[in-house]
Length: 173
Image 1 (cartoon, rainbow, N blue to C red):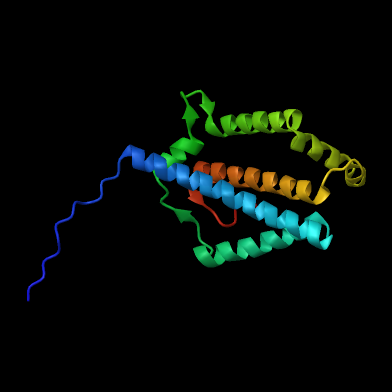
Image 2 (tube, rainbow, N blue to C red; image 1 turned 45 degrees about the vertical axis):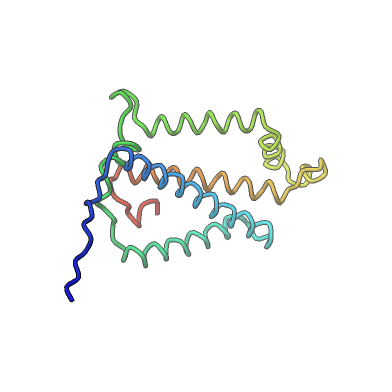
């Protein structure tokens, strides 16, 4: 018997769909960065090894995965809207990377000045043993510091990809 496919409309992509997709990618990358930062923080607190050794090892593992996934080649063909959003200019005056840096600095300044966790990070950075004596949970706040660092690294990576209009596996080496 003859089977006919039901009629279907071709998928139409609108600006709203593109914006929603970019937002989902943006949030996903930030969450991934935070997760990697938390893994680094957990490994530092659990093993007692120097943070440099842990983060260097994590970088080697992730870079190897990137080389395997991309076959060590640059990934291009990203949507132009991504490059315009993260690598363009606002009103033709302010480059978006500058705006991202300023907004990030304002958020982190508010975090460290107004929130207890931010002040605890200051104490932890000054002297972790004194912070522990002051009742600060050093392990939890160390993981938080690494998570914030991971988010900032993910943000910087997105800006870099937008400026290059390609994801270069060797960038940042």
